[in-house]
Figure (cartoon, rainbow, N blue to C red):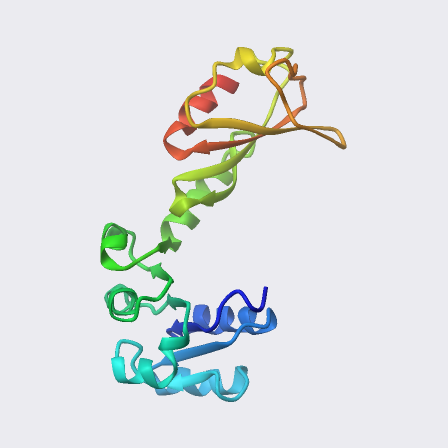
Length: 224
């Protein structure tokens, strides 16, 4: 895994950037963190190995070239300012052709700007993500999201079949699943079953499905 990326550049050395750098260093990655605030930079010097933290503006081309952006394959812009993150992303993608550009979205209202046309490969909308997780946890018996892929457009979800569910003792083929929805596994006790159309769902079964987010409601209705 350590050889997968040549260099990872992190723009923003606050709590998110510092923690991310620590994780990457533990994984054996080569990392540089650019931070333009003197106090935050001093914290980075205390937390990270020598040479990792760099004081300066992560949207300054001369500084980016100085820290080796030509050898970078990933840039993560994680400052607390969406405008700075977007400028860094566009510069990295279009000026330096960085393979993978990841941006932190601080204000959910700015998420629409973070598109491939603006140089963003992945936009992590932390406020939206946390809010949705809180809503899901308010109803622990409902369909649960295990993880999201493709910027949230694809979900891996889990649902437990209750004894009163209309699908208890029905086959998978009889569910009438929506498009872009696949049941990947049925967990029954300690057994993991790869289902077929003839698999009969039993009360207490945990269904793990891969779905397009737009079909979440249809899957809930199918398993109700």
